[in-house]
Length: 394
Ligand code: NDP
Image (cartoon, rainbow, N blue to C red; front, side):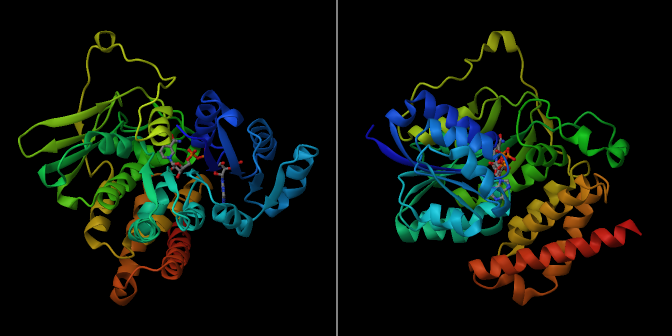
């Protein structure tokens, strides 16, 4: 493969570290020209990565971290920058492959900017697709760029679709581990704490996505992502609880065949697939011993236990700005849960109420998608969520 220019947004996070690991194993600075790496508050690690990969630029998202980043990079020749404008400037620097692994809505603007120079965007930042899928994919089409899925479920669907006719797809099944509380009595969920919600039975991930897995907001987001990525009708998209998390997704075809993607709990598979696509490179992931595993089990994804799934389905049907309101409401509800302002089950109450209130303005929610309007709906939804959180506290 020819030498490529690489940028990694969110390099210091869980997806980012796995990406850096693969880049390093595939030759690091000897194989790639690293244009930019970005991080947040962990500037020490960002500087280590940037020096090891001989990056041109390291960007922290936070202005108050710039001095520490400069100090950590002193004498290395790596340029240091900070803040939102610096992230956008980094995204504007031409690169052949860009990893989008910032957490949350903050990942949208750099992703959109990166697409303008026709890059390949490996998209882990699911919030971008949920909040502004048509905008992101429209920008990719306009500029001849490509978006490759990194979420393991969507990478699995993408792989199960290779060589197939989309018209023959009858259903897409996204699996869910069920998260930290899948075996808890439903009446105990209201008492669950952030600490209890922050441990995942199968995957090691960032804290926010781990809690979103326990509430199933993560799976709700993935249902919406599936609709956006693959243009599949909401009625054909299903969630299925699969506690072992070995099958990541399945595609069912009109002849009754189901193509399942099976793999270990290691994000380096999906990241490595996107990094080396369309080739399959050797990856340092565990080879499954299926005889030892013995069995795989499945359960229905109950929308009473996990209202996030029902809400996500309504969002898929509604389209327009519903995804932006859903994402912002969910991020705000999660912040409130982490701050112990609301309980675990109240997160879905907050998101449902945000959507209800914003949907009352049909003119707002249905107009053509633009970045300005996505930002506006995001802002309104966060304000509404804050009001609802306050009312729940009284
Ligand atoms: P982490 O929280 O582990 O990492 C997030 C990264 O974003 C870090 O580099 C962090 O910097 C940086 N960051 C934090 N806040 C900001 C901000 N306001 N602006 C810019 N950068 C910021 O998250 P994950 O790696 O778990 O997830 C990243 C994305 O990938 C999310 O959208 C998630 O939903 C998605 N995803 C994650 C999976 C996983 O296995 N972890 C699986 C599938 C999708 P720092 O740490 O230096 O502060």
